[in-house]
Image (tube, rainbow, N blue to C red):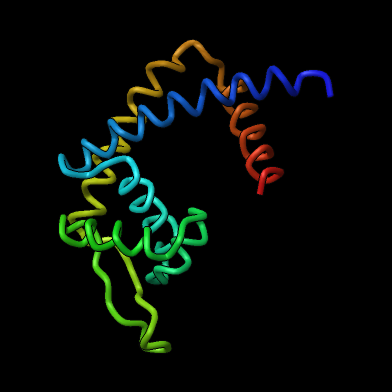
Length: 144
């Protein structure tokens, strides 16, 4: 299909930048947090907006083994960014959500990132930004 090679090339460039940005954001959240832990933290935040999320669901969203996520969650808990507790409906499962400190740290890091992104996209029209968001949403939906 015409254009797919260009899309793949630009996505590769974008993913490299995103990995670098994740490392930087992780350090802004907590100096001991790495990019992998940051990814887990973001999923916990996204998936636990209404109710705490099961740790197994975090693993599913990230496509990781439960043991990997369990280690990351233990590290996040030790840093005071999340809390874990037994699922009252299933004693074998753990429920996870952000602590207030974790939410605040993530909000601060994202605010800084958003300011930087706003600066980088200053020359874009509102129409271009809306179109980009729509196309990225469509791409994400199609890749799911």
